[in-house]
Image 1 (spheres, rainbow, N blue to C red):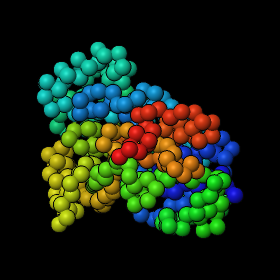
Image 2: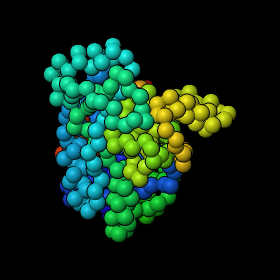
Image 3: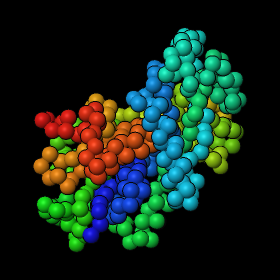
Image 4: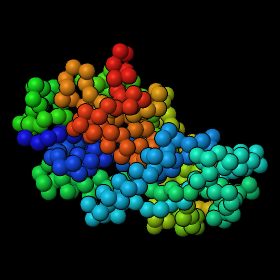
Length: 347
């Protein structure tokens, strides 16, 4: 018997497994081969919402803990998964510049918004109003992290690569059984797949389809992540990730080409050097209507739990809420009401 079965191994499942193993608990991960939003994500950690120059929810606390967590995880995986990466906001007008400097006076933002304008870091992008820099930012190498952890779990015979069949789950008073695997508790971290989960599909999970272009350009020579309308993020080797779109209502016909055309239009408006599109990647982000994660316990089956709805800032939010869920499951520490999935139980 293991202590926990974890269903799904994106960012949520990964950070949960790490917290549980840190507490000496045994885990068994079951994960299908579908494209995960976690793998598509740029992996940026940035506590500032650059559309309005405001702090993200619990941004300072989440960022501080996330950096400690990922450094510790990198040590345990013996793999570099975190890199410093400046994040620049390209200003489109003098008014945007002024708004930036007004926000710097707010105590919660002063530690993150640089008071010095940044000159153009690349000749490939015209920025007559220059850039503002968000400090203490970086990137988690999400795919590398998941692959390294998956390999570690496989070496312990604790990883099953197949889709989870909810109809085969047996629930007892003292635990669960799935295909002969016995566990004290099970946690569902299925991303948007939670909508097909018969135990938690009543939760208010919304799918937002996000698409990136992967491009290659020798002339771009960019070493910072730049936010204009979309993000452009350097990946190394003259490759860059550009996007992502954020679509709730997706047209059924010709979606892939339509979103590609949309991104190309914005990219051509942003950069003035040749590039080649080498890939287009799309996944559905699991988001929640109130922009807070879904964490907690099934209202009837007390050995069933959920960790989901991390949204676009999953790499930053994930470690904090996984830690809170582990404290709840192991020590009975009460979950904060704003993340507790029971807030939707009546719905």
